[in-house]
Length: 327
Image 1: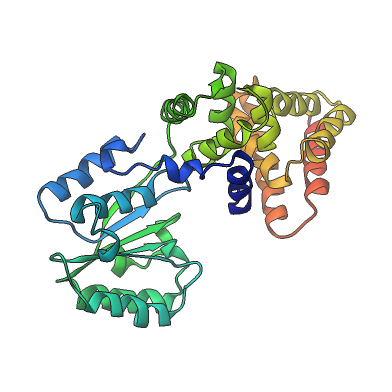
Image 2: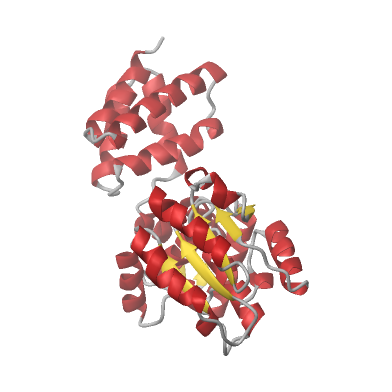
């Protein structure tokens, strides 16, 4: 869900956005990343925090972990003054390193060191990363850097070698389900088991997406059920994706195309979302290994073409047609 969708959900309910309201305030409150939390807590307990690099997909706790560290190190009253958060995708040039980061790093008060948190650090240009490396060396005595990124491979090796690297994995279904049930109970919302399962499926390991979807679905009625979740998230039911693929493999292109057209026009799915759900579900379908391999090959080809700017519906129909013609 986009930032605009988050604001819409908050306005519709008349309450603050739940991802902020229920954001964990301490490391111990973070769900689904127990091994990482344990290691980070040991750094804090020993008062020996190195530079840190968090990598992983969206909504798995990277930003939350960074702010929780600052809260535990400086206390609730002082952490904001000792914590500089920058989003590198908005401020990605060398000037932000030279000016804002260096200016913050040069000053020190209220503690032995201050923390600079650079979110989406993989968006920094190569020149900016080189400048950041030099800044990390220059101010290592009074500043700790926490870098967050989706792909650590886009961070230059000299920075990676100066950091303790933590790779956040997508959250387990149990972690997402547990958190959504806790929030629903706190908000006095009735959520069915099928509704929780739908939230977990739509989130795909992204806690932020699950909580946003729960808040949005809560505006549609008294009960958050499967129907409400799939409607608000514009997500196809797993059985719809499976029937579309099995129809195509059986040679019934017209029926498979009708299902695809319904997903794109009635459900409102984007072509990229259909590709993502297909990819997630391949090994859950009752397909032979040969059929699964063919489907994966076609998915990869369609995904590449869509990423390069081709028409989404044409490429998806081409995928189904290719499957229908396979012997």
